[in-house]
Amino acid sequence: MLTAHPSLLREFVERCEMLRRRLASGGSAETRRQLEDASYTLCVLTGTRQLDTALSAARRQLADAMRREQPLRH
Image 1 (spheres, rainbow, N blue to C red):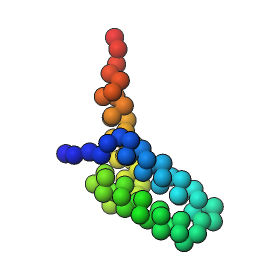
Image 2: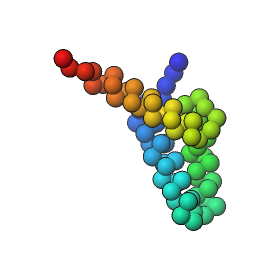
Image 3: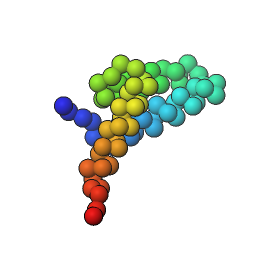
């Protein structure tokens, strides 16, 4: 299975979280549209259909990438 580059996943996780916060504090229609666009992209990147599922999948993929980059030392 193909996976997105960790930096791209991180960018979209951060973007979605920021836009969610902005929307919760009275964001505009433009903020809502931006969140919808970012959510769609994150769902495509993670092969999911819901933002919460996409965020979980992206975080899991990022954690896996970190473990691969920094193997445990004995």
